[in-house]
Image (cartoon, rainbow, N blue to C red; front, side):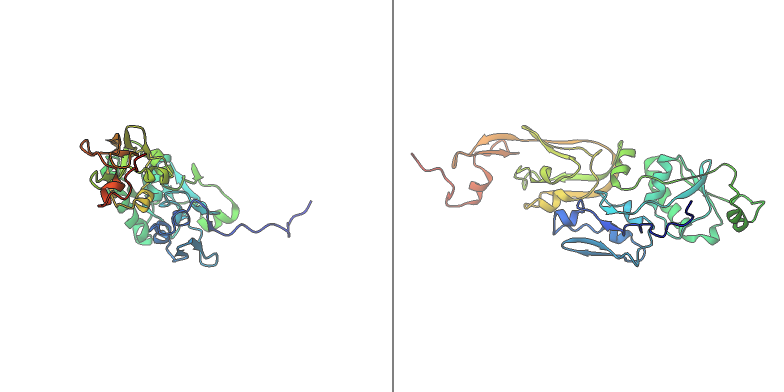
Length: 294
């Protein structure tokens, strides 16, 4: 039996998949992953993002804010927990987004650590508690670490397991977060009816189907929205705004009417009951699109 496998395939380098918003929409302003990277290993461009394999820490921070699960070959950090708290070892990189997933997926309610030794964790727990307060969820506590009878280095070397300590990873990405927080909306959708032309581009661009156009209305489902801003990226009339605002999830519906333009005789959608000309004919002062008589 071979003890070593010299031809073991190296792990694939971290990358960004085709679902990246900057690849779908070259002018998209999304920079969620780059802002989350603690070592600036992610470079943004019109063609998308690239991750520097040599600089990347594999911390997984970029996974959690991404609205389309675009980062590839990365996984959330494997962490230890005991009962309702996270326990050592603690990584240097941690975000409130990850801790929020631990709160809902594993019912974790705190961390056991020395505050002076882990100031980053103390700050992130405080940030998490601000969100939990808005969600009316129990806040996290910082517990003193449990004394160990065996030196942790010797325990690791001897492979002595901690009593009742388990290991796990949380799901990452805004899609997984929305699935856990479906009763709350983290984003507020607003539509200017005076600017919107009901063209349907926003609904076609939405990767989550949070925006849908029916025969009678434009509908927005907050339980699906990940705040990717694809709708604002394609709205040429700047009628849509997406703002970060935590509140109860309330679907919105904007009814419109289907009419026939008196100038060009094309069918068009409008939010104004008085409109009798399509949006194109309204913009042409000299009736350039008017139907020619037979």
